[in-house]
Length: 113
Image 1 (tube, helix red, strand yellow):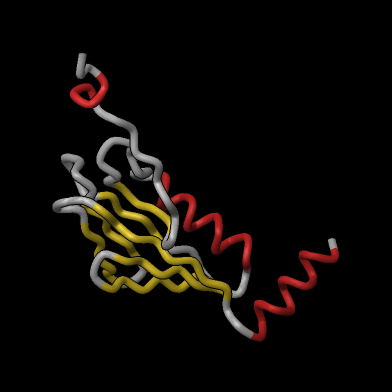
Image 2 (cartoon, rainbow, N blue to C red; image 1 turned 60 degrees about the horizontal axis):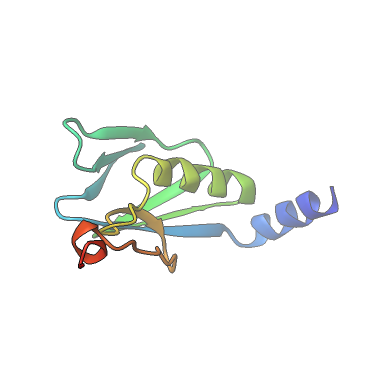
């Protein structure tokens, strides 16, 4: 309970923020009004309505999410990341800024006998 109150006080002074980066050929994000439009290699673009109290900024292939409520900022960032998590072979997808994705060896690297 104490942490929730402390986060609310801290959020009123300065906004919390999380940054996501989009990796992959043809993967991009656009902001149209209150809707974040993600092109992630699917046959259709993904439209995400930004909730009240959350501000989203798109700069190239990075998306910055900010707001006063720490839990809501984290939840929105996790939902956006969940649309296309980083895959372990090429690393394509949406990841948190600074997140390190462990890459796996492919079939050719494994079967070298």
